[in-house]
Amino acid sequence: MHFIPEEIDEYVVKHSEDEPELLQRLNRETHQKILQPRMLSGHFQGRVLSMISKIIQPKYILEIGTYTGYSALCMAEGMQPNGELHTIDINEELFDFQRKYFDLSNYGPRIVQHLGDALDIIPKLEMKFDLVFIDADKENYSNYFNIIIDKLNSGGVILSDNVLWSGKVLESQFKKDDVDTPALIEYNRLLKTDERIETVLLPIRDGLTISRKL
Image 1 (cartoon, helix red, strand yellow):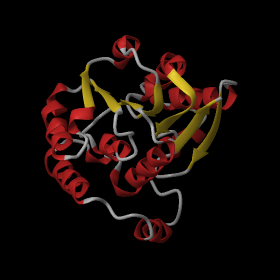
Image 2 (spheres, one colour; image 1 turned 120 degrees about the vertical axis):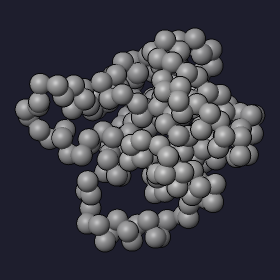
Image 3 (cartoon, rainbow, N blue to C red; image 1 turned 180 degrees about the vertical axis):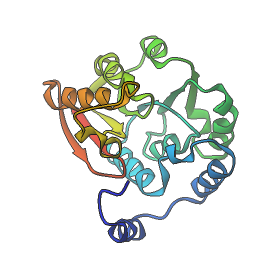
């Protein structure tokens, strides 16, 4: 779904930073071999993630939802030389695919993969984070926020993807089996009202929220 005219969208991409060659390869192979390639952050959003990370210069990054590793590599571009990026995914079939591209990058040794339920894994991580990216099952977004907020440094940033959900967040009635839309509506309300953070929602692709801990 395009929230701005497609021609403007193309102009925006054309006048933003080019997609690095390794990420072009990852992008192509994801579309060739992996189910649901639409889940990939992609060129433009990837450059946004990279830019935010470079501005923050995080020591520790947490990602919930690795998919094929594209967004992790984008955020790693801004990581401090002694930093680490911890990325969590529940799909073990993608583990080796992710690792291949992590090891082809300059950040491989500093990217730590975790396999399993993020709600079980996060409490076991001992460090505090400067940058967090949430891009996993929408039903648990609020649960992820609540478990992350105390592990986020003051001034740290949470990025939340897909918060516009193809415009479905404007709907007032949902299908019986739709748990994601009401969960995202509640999550967006949480980010707006929680006094521990300040938030801005950007209409980038499917919606990207930037929340900064006070």
